[in-house]
Length: 141
Image (cartoon, rainbow, N blue to C red; front, side, top):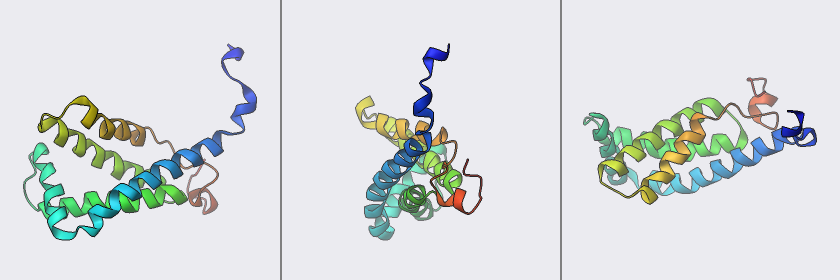
């Protein structure tokens, strides 16, 4: 089974992890900033999606948490700081977004983006060596 792995690529695993973190983090920052900047009306609208989980109180709070999860979570992924908590917050945000789209009856092409990102964030195992977590010895292996 040795032929299934090409050992020279193993040395590039941390570079791949860096590219994944920076690429996804930048996308989340770009998606999150308009939601953060939208303020209370935008947050209330976003927070209403929690109704799909039966949570109907404090929609402005939940919406703000979603907006900041995308923006700040993306920024944390870029630098590799608090990577696992950031990925967990982003995974939950994408889970709620997926439920919102499915609940509205949106087609697969609409809700699949949030679902796919949610799976990626759930699978995020750590920041890798090229991260602030590793530099600060926070388990970046």
